[in-house]
Structure formats: structure tokens, C-alpha cells
Length: 146
Image (cartoon, rainbow, N blue to C red):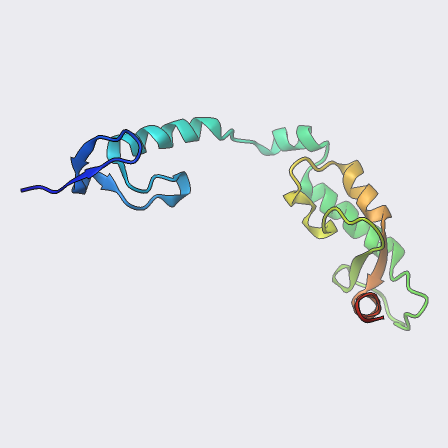
């Protein structure tokens, strides 16, 4: 005797072996194979494939070009702290943006913002002070602990 289970999607009794118990990405837990396949096909149609060119048209600039521009800004400015006593040259990885007011996102993670543009990233940079890692740690400590 075969065991029957109710499909969560179509509410019909189907064999237990025909039920999908995983596939959490498409929310298909406890659905029959027929409903699972239909839902996956419909979901794939809804997710548009965005090419690099479409992203460039959407943002006006590619994320690699924006990262290069951020690197140039860092190297041109250096540490803006009056207390910094670093005597050597700065590398890109030594410098961090310290937000002074109303932070929207981390500068280095701009590409996670859905509709980022060059202007939005530059506006966020304008709200920041560029500091070396040591000065940034000191500034954060002063903010947090006074």
C-alpha cells in the first residue's frame, strides 16, 4: 500500500515519493513534482538576466570603473586627519571612509545598493572624511566612548 500526502500547492493527494521536501530557494517544500516544475519555470521567467552592458546603461558606469575612481580619490587625498603622524606613502587598502553624517551605505559596498549611480556614490563620499586605518579606529573610539 502506497502512502499518500497532500500537495501544499494544488491540494491533491499524491504518492509520498512524488513530494518535493527540499528546494527552499523557490519555497517548494511539500509540493508535488508537477507543481514544483511549474513554479520553478514561472519563477525563472520573472528573474531578468542583466548583462554587464545593461548594468552600465542602468548605472551610467560599471562597478569596476567606479571602484577605480574610488581608488583614485583615496590616493589623491590621503589621510585627512590633523593628528595623523604617518610619514610614508598611503596605499588604497590603508585608507577608509569615515562617515560624518547620515550614512546611506558603505562606500566599498556600493554595488549592493540596488539603484546606485556615480552621483550617489560621490555624494556619499562627500559626507565622509578619508582616514588611514589607525586614525579611523581612533575616530570610531572617540565617537563611541567619548
